[in-house]
Every structure is written in C-alpha cells, then in structure tokens.
Length: 420
Image 1: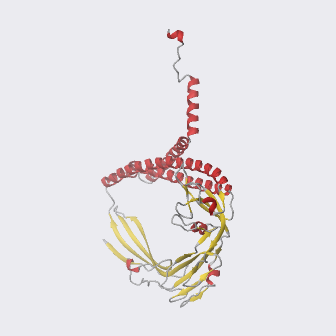
Image 2 (image 1 turned 135 degrees about the vertical axis):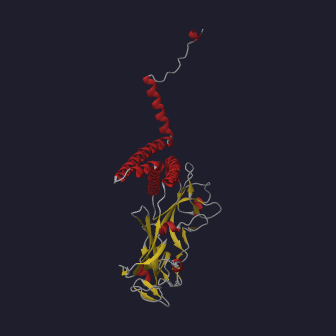
Image 3 (image 1 turned 90 degrees about the vertical axis):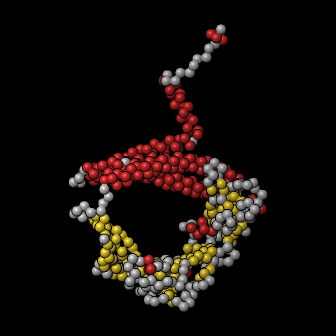
C-alpha cells in the first residue's frame, strides 16, 4: 500500500532557491527467521571470499612495493647516466632505456576558447566551466518500526533549485508537476595548446604529458575574474566573473539561467620528462620497470635534479602502497564481520532491552581487533617473503638457532676408518 503525500515544507534555502518535499509511504513486513538465516549464510560465504581477496591484496601490494623499490634504485643509477636536452642524444638509445630529458616548453599557439575569445599569453589550457540553474531531485528513505512489528518506509523526495554542471532531465522526477527544467544552450569544454619540449611533442599516441603539467598544483593559474575580463559574452551579459544567459541574473537566478566562467593554466618556461623513447615516434612514453612491470613517467616543472625525480617516485610509491594497505585492512574487517553474520543474527534474536546492541558492539570490537592483528601479521609476512635477502637471512638465522639449541641434528659423516 503506497500513497503520495505532499508535505507543507516550502522554504528558502541559503542559496536563494526554493525547496519542496514530498513523501511516499509504504508498509513493509520484516523478513522471517528463515529469510534472515538464509541471508546470514549468504553473507558468511561472501565474507570468506572477501577475506581471501584481502589476503591476496596484502601479498600483491607488498610484492609491488618491494619490486617498485628495486626499479627505483635502478632508475637512480640510470638517470645519472642518461640526462639529456637534445633529441639527437636519445634517438639511438636502446629500447626501454630510462632518460631524464630537460628543455624549454614551446607552444605552437596559446590555447583559446574561440567561441568566447578567451586566451592568455602562454596558455597551455583554457577551461570553460558551465552551470545551469535547475530543479534537482534528491531521494532518501526513512524506516520506522510500528507497534505491530511491521516497518514503515517513507521515500522522501526533496526538490530544490541549484546550480548544476549539466542538464538535469526533469522527466525522470517522481513529482514532475511544478518542477520542469529547460535544456541549456551551452556546455563546458577544454581547449589545449600543442606543446613541445625542446622540439619534442608532449602529445602522442602513447601519452599526453600536458595533463600532468596542468594537474600540477604549482602550475600558474589565471583565476575566473581575470579570465572573464577577456571574454566576449556575445548574446549574453557579463556579470562579475561570469557570462550570463537566459532568464534572471547570475546573482538572482531563475530556472534556466546559464552561467559560464573560465580558468586558464599557463605553460611553464622549462620542464623535464622522465620516461623512455617511444618506438617509431619522435616522442616519449612511460618507462616500464623490469622488476615490477609498473609504468614510471613524470613531467616536472623547471630543471629538476635526479634526486628530485627519485624523491617524487618514492613518495608516490609509498602513498599508493599505504592506500592499498588501508584498503586491505578494511576488506579484512568487512570480511570477518560478514563471516560472523550468524552470530549477529543470534544476538539480535535472543537478546533484548538494549543488550543486543551492547553485545553487537562488543562483537564488532572483537572483529576489529582480530582484523587488525591478522592484517599486521600478514603484512609483515608478505613484506618479508617479498624481500628474498631478508627472507633467506631470517631462515638461515632460524635454522642456526634451532641447531644450537639441539632441535636440529645433522647426520655425522663417517671417517674412512669408521666406514672400513
């Protein structure tokens, strides 16, 4: 049984838009004990699978961390010998030879948004940011227990007017009446300049090195205010940092108002690529580490030293590995929690008066501790196994200790006299 009810909750929000809230109620009978038990069994099986995946991720991650470190040590030596600034120096190098190539960044022409005439001196990329003021629907579901044991579910649909980066189709709204959106006439876009490093293209079929320069937080950016000062808004009107179109105004918008702002990334004067020569192409691609099989490729501003490049690689390697370690721990905890779903069901079924929640929290705490111990232990084991020198050294030390304690006996060799 469902019913659509309009709640009298129209109000102005902090952004100046109008909010409307609608609710849809239905009565849901909770699952029986058989259904709960079946669901718990399925969760147990899934939990075991998640635990095994977590163990695999731990060993894979530690292996990659160690092999990436081997590749980094190799790179340190190779880049000291292979730092160049001319294509003629690198053109005849062997395949997959890592190089550090330094030079001046040259643009064929500055990037430009031709529709609005926005550009800048040495502009590497011009970004057009588009927004349209529209109705937006958000849905939340609230659940309440009734006196007879049933549950009441209420789907709450909230409609508010706000700026969006794309067109929202109001035909998909649950309550379409009074919430009609018009389609915009513009869209966002990016315009990048053709760039070279000492004559070597930064854009190839293998990789676009420009995006790393643009993503660099230290790259010079031209803010929307300065960029808008050069914009030709055409049929629109300039309003602060925006070109404004349609009904209303950018500061007092109505549904259908569109606004466009701009941001500009400036190309650095000098840069350096750490990579390798692309086969059959006068350009660079990422270098593949022989130990790990991972791709290594960087473009940094200025004239970075080999130490700076290696430091960046080591920092990224450590950040990635700790991220995967955290992911493995979360997976381990969730797997253990799912594997003990029957115990959680037993607690919810037997206990009452708040004791079920206390016992459930205690069980979750125990799961967290077990997951932490397993994760730490497996991470240490995986790291040790992934380091052959350390692993075999520890094994030799262990055998030596056992031999000295007398737990291991080696058969004594007979002398020629004893053999006779």
